[in-house]
Length: 377
Image 1: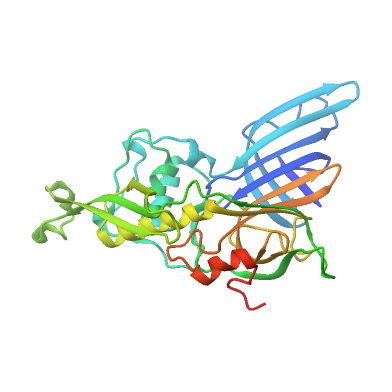
Image 2: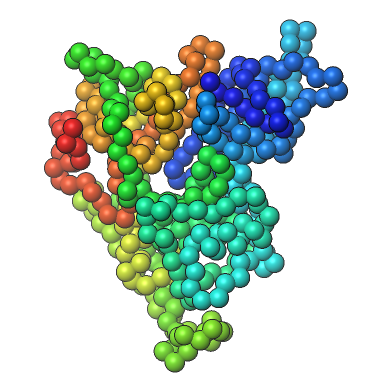
C-alpha cells in the first residue's frame, strides 16, 4: 500500500498519485490529490513541509512539499500537493563566493559536493556508488564559483568531466553514479500476443528519432598548463598559465557525414578527457534516438522490489521488433482510481549513459530482425 508521511501523520486516502524519477535528472517530482477529513483549526500540511512516500515499508521518495492547494465543497475536502526531492535546494539556490567550497590539494567529487551542501545548510549527504570508481580531481582542476550558478550547475561541471551522473536516492541524498555496472534483473518485460508467454506489458510505444544524431561530435576545450617549477605549489593558480586550445572527437557510424555537432566543454581539460567528453555526448544523443516506453501493473517487478532507474531488463516486444536488454532511464509511478497502481518505464540502449559504446554492427542490424542484443537468455 502507498502512504504519505507528513508532520508525524500518515495519509492513505489518495484520489491520485504521480511520482516521476529520471536517471539523468538530479531532482525527482511528486504530486497527489488527497481526500481530507476537516481539522478543527487548520489543514495539517503546508508548503515547505518534509514528506516521505512509502510503498509498504520501502521508501520511494523523501522531499519538500512545494505547493499545497486546498479545495472544499459540500461534497468534501481535498488537498492537491506537489513536491520534489530534498536535493531541490541544490537545483534552485544560486551561488556567490561566500558559498564556494574550500579545498586544499586533490579532492573527491562527493567531498566537494558535501562541502557545498553543508554551506547551503541542506540536511542531506553526498554519496557515491561503491561499485564504481570514486571520481577524483587534482588541485588544478578545482573550479571557481560563477556568480549566479546553481549548486547543481556547479557540481554538474565536475560530473560531466568524470563521466558520471548526479541523482537522488529514496532518502533524499545526492547520489554520484554511473550506468557502467547497472545490474540485470531476472524479470522480463513481455508483449507477444502470438505466443503462449505471459505478457506483463499493458501498453508500449517504440520511438526511433534521428534528429539528435550526428556523424561527428567535436568537444572544444582549453587546457591550462602550469609551468613545471610551480606545478605542485599550493598557490599555483595565482600564476600565469599557458593555454592550449584542443578538440576532442567522437564519431558515429551509419549517420550522414554532413551532420556535425560542435560544442564547448564546461571546464578546462586535456585531449584525452575531451575525447571522452565527446564520446559521452555521442552516446547520450543515441539514447534520444531510440526509446522504448511501456506500462506495467504495480510498482514492483517481482512482487517485492520497487522498479527503479539504472537497472537492465530483457524486453521482448515482437510487433515492435524489440528483443534486447535495455536500461531503465525513467520511472513514473501512477496511482489512479481506474487502474490502481501502475508503473510507466522508459528504456534506452544499455550503453546510453556510458563512455564506451557497446553496440556493434550486428546489434544495429538486430533492430530490423529482432535478434537478442547483449543477452544469453
